[in-house]
Amino acid sequence: MANAAQSEVTGFSASVMRFLESIEYRRIENSDDLEDIARLRYKAFTSVGLARENDELQLIDELDFKPNAHVMGIFFDEQLVSTIRVHHVTDAHRDGVAVARFPDVMHPLLDAGKTFIDPVRFAADPEIMREYPALPYLTLRVATMATVYYDVDFCLSVTKSNHRAFYKRVFNSIELAGPRYVEQYQNELELHGANANELKRSLFKRYPFFDSQPHERKMMFAPREVLGLTPLTILPTARYAIQQASRMV
Image (cartoon, rainbow, N blue to C red; front, side, top):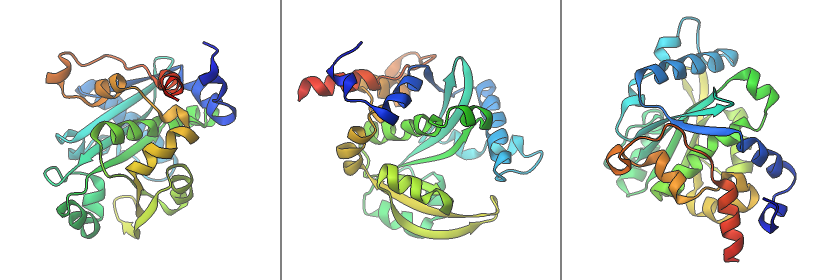
């Protein structure tokens, strides 16, 4: 596949792109798969002190089942290695962690017609992440695809303060609300937001592995009645999106 488009992907992005070629995405839509997600969340959250012993069953909550929720599994060599949940938050569909934790900030924005992707419940197998530190990028790629698919105004980040620098560096996120203590996590959480237009303008140039083609985004987020059958696996299309972009230059 050597071509001009590939030659432009160098250094860190090239190594992440190679890892991406071994990744598959899957929509999590049945109880057995959700049990696997709960176990992974438990393993990941206990390793960083965000879950207590015997909390595994509580790591599937009512927000996983909301009509604006999408729970995704990321698989490497057929093994579930990470997961993320995104909510498409609008005036009509306000379910999401950002709204629940920062209602005074979110409700006025929603009243004004702003729309959001709210990615939460990021969890990665600690052992796999030690060996493949690019895994968080390929997990958060789900959020960037949702941002483009739904054509929202902002992609949010509900995060601890020690992750603030990462979201600012990668997504140019700005603070929407400062730290607030959340009893459930026994931690302070902050709310940040990345302007979707800025993401689409610059993110894919800086980190081309975040890019995707329309059919991949459709398989990730389109309703069942649109797709007919839910795809078993979804293969990344970042490399093809780069090639297509190069032909348009």
